[in-house]
Amino acid sequence: MSAVTYQSITERVKVWLDEDGSTLQIQFNNPDRHNALSVDMWEAVVPLLSTAESDDRIRLVVFSGAGEKAFVSGADITQFEDLRAAQEAVARYELMAEQALMGIYNFSKPTLACIKGYCIGGGVNVAMSCDIRIASSDGVFAIPAARLGLGYRYSALKNLVDLVGPAMAKDLFFTARRIDANEARNIGLITRVCETSELPAVQAEYKKALAENAPITVRAGKAIIAEILKASPEIDHDKCRQLIKDCFESEDYSEGRRAFMEKRKPVFRGK
Image: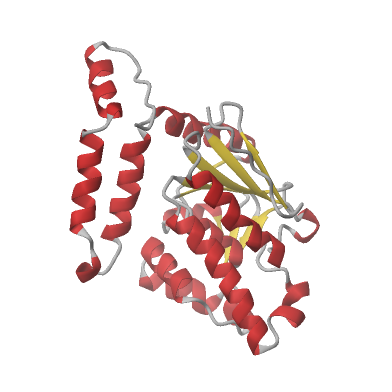
């Protein structure tokens, strides 16, 4: 068992391992501002993911928001004047946000956004960077950049288009309108919707599945899907073939076959 430990650089991001050590929980903890993202919160994400990347225990990383009202309500606008008014400050802020979001998107293991209440602006970007998005029925989603005069990064708009298509991406972005959880699910922005009281149980389903399923296969699937989403000339087919080969040559594949023949549940070790 790895001796890796986790500690956030700020109290406004909480981090802990679930009981069996297979799931890392990263919680945005700024409930007085509906978990609006401050600079230190963006900065906390990358080192936590960097540690989890090399921790063999971790099969899933879950992002959530503290309290009952919000996942993330956007950027902390109290910092806008200092951090986004001047050109250099804008560049610094955008770099920090981009590093955090791409850190989530490029993380090799599965990530899940567990959403309650408001998921606005930067919150939508965090959620879109995750592989799976589950939300309670009180979820509210919006991208209000056009109401604030903000420029939006290519990566964030590409994630939006990849999930909901160009027509709906234009609808949401141009109007800045708010949509509820059911509409968000119907257009593909989120994966599942449930009642608020059921959200922990739904999250537990994913934690159990990822703890039990073969991590090499899951990671290979995630990497190949990322290749599929690239423009055709950029797809690395050799990488995809090697990832599939790695699955078939793994101890986990041998265990899966034995367990199937012996009519028992397999025990995968990520080797």
